[in-house]
Length: 365
Image (cartoon, one colour):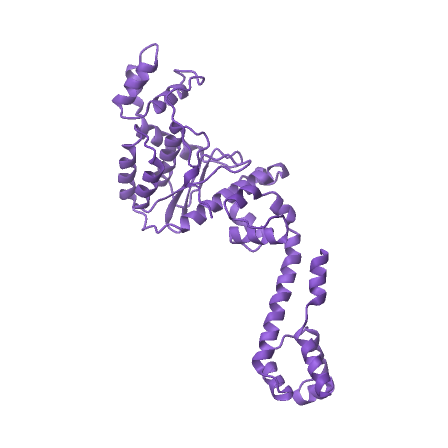
C-alpha cells in the first residue's frame, strides 16, 4: 500500500467516533448507552469500532437515546462505508498496475478513453470502466479467452498484443452503442452491398460515410477504428445484441485491400452464424479456414468475377488492367491486386492504388 492510501485510511473517521464524542459530551458511558438501547455492551462496541454497520433500526435507537436525528447517523454510515470501499478498491487496483502497463495507454488517452496523466490506480479504474468490467479476471474472460487461441494466451510475450486487440474490439462496441440501429434485415443488407458496389470503381472521397450510412439502414454497424500497437488487424465481424458489427481499419492504406476486406466481412455476416467471431490477420486468432475461404470467395465474386481470367493476354500491361476494370465496372487497383494474387503479375507493381485514410472517422471523445 502506498503512503497516500495509508494516510487516507488513518484519517478516515468512523461513525463510532461521533458516537464517542457525543457520549463524552453528555457524560454517558458505553455501558449505559447499551442499557438504554437494549443492546449488549459488546454489540455497542462493535458499532463504535465499525465492525457492525449502523442500520435503520440502530439509527432510530440512537435518535431516541442521544437526541440526534436518525438520518444524520444513516448519512454518516453511508459516507463512511463508501469511503472505506473506495480505499479498499484503490488498494486492490494497485495490484493491477502490471495489467494496465500491457495496454495501449497512449492511444487510449489520445482517443479520450483514459484521462489520467500517469499509470496508477486511477488509470486502472478508468481502464476497467472502459471495458465495463470489475477486474482483469472478467476482462480476460470476455475479451481474451474467446478471441485468442490457448497457446497465444499463455505466452507472456503476447500480452501486449492481446491487450491491444481487446482495446480495439472494445472501441468498436462502444462506438456501436452510439448508433441508433434498426433490427438487422438480411435482404436489406444484400441490397445495401449492391448499392455500395456501384462506388467501388470511382472510390469517392466520402466512400466511408456512404458505406456506414447505407449499411446502418439494414441494421449493420460499420465502425472504423485505428490499428493499435501489436494488433495490426484489418477487420473483424461479430454480432452484438442481434446486430452485426463490422469493424474496419486502414491498415494497408490501399483501396483494393479495403474493398476486399469490406466484402469479406460482409460475406461473414451473410454466410455465417450469429455466434461466429471473425478477426482478420491477427496472429493469435484461431480462424475457421473453411469459413474464411468462403468469405474470400464471396468478396472476390462481388469485386471481380473469376471469369475475367478467361481472355487474359499473354503479356499484361496497364492498358489491359484498365480495360478489365472498365469491363467489370471495378477499380483498376482491384484488378491489379487479383492478378498479383493469382501470380500473373509481381507484387512489386504498385500502380493504380488509391490511398485510404480513415482517420477522420476515428471517434475522438
